[in-house]
Amino acid sequence: MIEKIKERLKDKIKEIKIHNERRVYLTIDRKDLRDVVNIIFNELGARYQIVTGIENFDNFELLYHFSFDKQGLIISLRIFLDKEKPEIESLTSIIPGVSYIEREVWELLGINFIGHPNLKHFLLREDWEEGLYPLRKGVKTDGK
Amino acid sequence: MANNKKVIVPIGPYHPLLEEPEYFQLYCDGEEVVDVEWIAGYNHRGIEKLSESKHYDQVTFLVERICGICSTSHPIAYCNAVEDLCGIEIPERAKYIRSVIGELERLHSHLLWVGLAGHFLGYNTVFMWAWKYREPILDMFEMITGNRNHYAMLRIGGVRRDIEDEDVPILKKTLSEVKGKIEMLTEAVLDDPVLAARLKGVGILKKEDIKNYGAIGPVARASGVDIDVRRDDPYAAYNLVEWKVITTENGDVFDKAVVRLLECFESIKIIEQCLDAIYHKKGEIWKEVREIPEGEGIGHHEAPRGEVFHYVRSDGNTTSPVRHKIRAPSYVNIPTFKASCIGETISDVCIILAGVDPCYCCTERIAVYDNDKKKKNYSFKDIVKKSIEKTKKIKEEIGKEGKLWKGLL
Image (cartoon, rainbow over all chains, first blue to last red):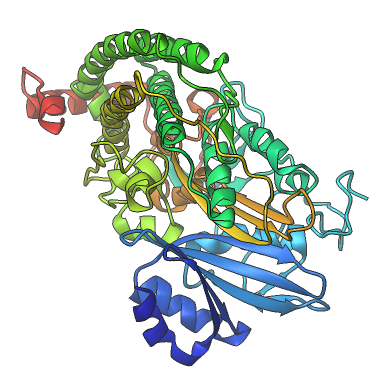
């Protein structure tokens, strides 16, 4: 399966990290995300699992986890985003189920999803302070 | 809203019959539900953030407290993730013990759901039965772990407590008694014409809905999607014992009940084999893990409701995870409401919502007001008449001697 994905995605893969035969991480470019997800989700039939958002020292990182259940393989697509203005295209038109997690990543980490039809608060109150993203490293657990 | 005739029926956030705070808005046109809005966050405790300030060993206890019902699913997935990060293999005895705990939990959780589903439908006998027969399973938990809930059995590298040899015969005896009771319950539930009338053909999820929303667990398996983490990406002792994945084809609420009930028997099979494997044998139950190196790991576990997913990242310097992402199964199962509830009547939506097992009910609190005379509004008499007709029809289909469930085993 890994070979098949490699062959299908070719130069869209910037870096490949094979942690073991069941956990593979592919670094891709932001602009290729929709194409790559189309191939993995629609053509190769992977199951969408979840999106993980991470704040690093000098950038943001998104991991889109997909599972190939027959092979027991989890493919994670890694994308680095600009620290100053983190934004990325929404995947809601390809995978309807991704809508809630995009809202969650947006409100907790402040990553903007371009083209999301309903980008409003999901877990936090509607009157939550603008610009306060609780999952960022600078925010303490008491909310300050 | 296209016209002001649509009525919003709120369910939650704090509802007398809801065990958990959750809020659904049903947009209704007559009896028909045209849209559903899910508003969450009433139970948001910031576990992912908290985890970043706890020691790796403390996180095991923290994630155990995410949910009371599937309290050991999160620690199993978390330990799988950290063990994936470190690249360690746990001792065989620990594998068997993990499977025993995981499957006992599935048993009690599925019985809990069957009871609640019966209660939501106004069939309280099922509720009483299921919860009564769930009790010996909690006693087994107490015997093995010392707790009826929050078992604290998991640790990175293995398990905390051993299953003593003298307990094994008692556990096996209790299990065989429970098995007989569950057989009786299964027969009663699956051959009941009233339950079939309420559940068959209701809230159907098609295969593409499952794919689009990423739904998992019994919800996916009831729609014929053959996925199960225990078999697909084996961990613990699931590849060391004989069992099979239960799937059905129709995708309605009835099939979800069938899948859950039949899974109970598979769980009993797994537990029995695991107990046999550790009886009168010695072995390590955990392996010491002194350092968590830099890296990232993914672990998942087939919880009673579906796959629990944990992602852990370590920087190698600190004793806490740098990032810990948790995805519980209901997060992807609940949004399937969009596919299963729209177009159904309000009275059916309650059990459809409950069908994915978010532990949830509403029937009593719904009142419908509608001035649009074109839309159908059933009177009490109409509803009684309709239900009698449907029950009669299904009774004929099943036949006098209901042997449906035996064919499924």
